[in-house]
Image (cartoon, rainbow, N blue to C red; front, side, top):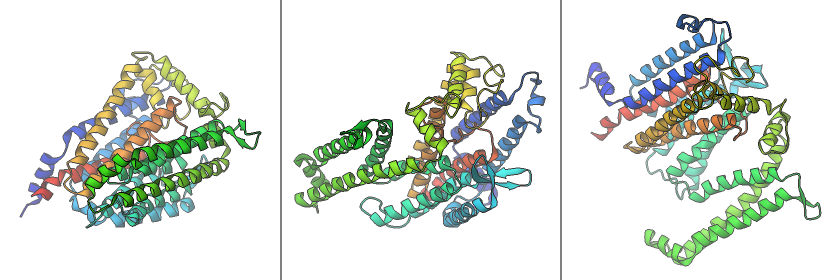
Length: 459
């Protein structure tokens, strides 16, 4: 029988230290960026002053230290704990999300922060790991198959949509959109490719429809956006029919499924294509309705991104100033604590949502590329760890972590560069705050603990 010390020794040798090194490196670079974003001219530059707990840089050290302690605690838990209590954790977090609007205070229009003493916590950040655990538990059940089972697909989507709906009720649209990234995990686990293609098509419909929504067409009866989206739907349907319904494609599918006949396979694929066309029309109409019901500032952000309006002193101000800050850094940057755009507070929310502009200004192109390469290493490592899991529980959870990190990285950096709409989500391990840092640490270290226990499962 293994003793506690044997178990700790086993965890120590089984843990993926490369990922932990990347984690610590990102924390260190993130803290330096927060120092740059929060530093003011005339403030002492010594480490003691930067670590003052009365400042944001000092408080971030508290969050970093507590996060590392949280990660260490997770590593010494039994990996079976997360499988056993996955649904209980999910249920508890969903109840907390449902109660948050009634307990939270209004902060910049958001009802997502619960004040505990002198601190505020955002339950939406912790719902991510809870949702990932619930999905991993469900998809690891005996006889589970995602492909060909609409029941399993519906339950999986319900587990994802529930926290999204509860977070939208808190007026946190950006945090809710993070859960859409989990379609990457569903695709890895057997979700039909046409559903993923439908999702990509939906984004295309929204962009094209909005971009040309103000241009009249067909004698003013509809907009040019509606016409172009209609042509896109016809084109996509024609491509799907050519790729999946031509005789050679159906015969290739018959070789993999010997129980199916030519006509049954063809009929099934045509049915899918018809459903795709119907869903495309519904998605386009729903997108128009959703945009009409967006808050005015959200609608303006989308319009600025698509070039439909100029608002340099309004909703477009953040992005313009962020671009100036990044561009002013040049190749090598201005150096640690030497940025001007950030020191003069031209960039709003520069220590949270727009933290990457500090990296660009102080560390330049070289420093920004180094940060992105480090994130790339982390994402590739997450894929590697996910693929070596002996059971679906670890693999599904790992791909959930990968999807969430990828979404945060692409959207946060993209909105700073003006390539994505400003939806207010943090950059992992860089943005100031305890809730996001704890949430990302929980996501990552639970996966590291599950991965460390794979050797026991293989025995």
